[in-house]
Image (cartoon, rainbow, N blue to C red; front, top):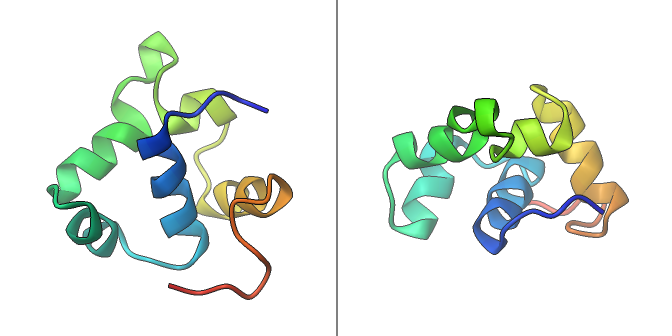
Length: 77
């Protein structure tokens, strides 16, 4: 399994459960830009969620979350 940080794991879970970036940010007490940064900004260093998982698609992030037991099928926020 790819090594996501606990924060990155919570972001992937939120996306998989259909939460918006704004809702994920509010639940974590950060700005939406912080969530976007975690998803994409560290791609050159390979530290972003999308770089670690090799995808830019929310659907693939959801697939990852289900396949790795982060969420259950039909689980919602």
